[in-house]
Length: 65
View: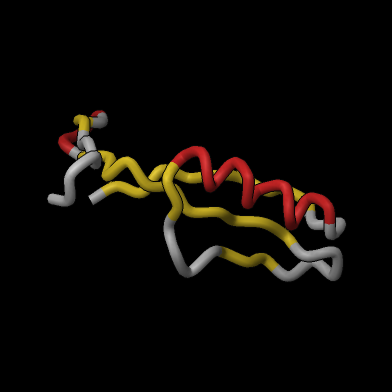
């Protein structure tokens, strides 16, 4: 595991990797998801881009392994 990445246990034995992905709905109703994962700070910053473009239901989801 790379230095600086921490893992912690989630319910039901799943482990959070410390990374997050984004999902959103485009203005035309198409549901989308990010292909890459971000650290928490970057995910929150990236979340503002689709919100500013008129997308709805923008959410950060923790990546589990």
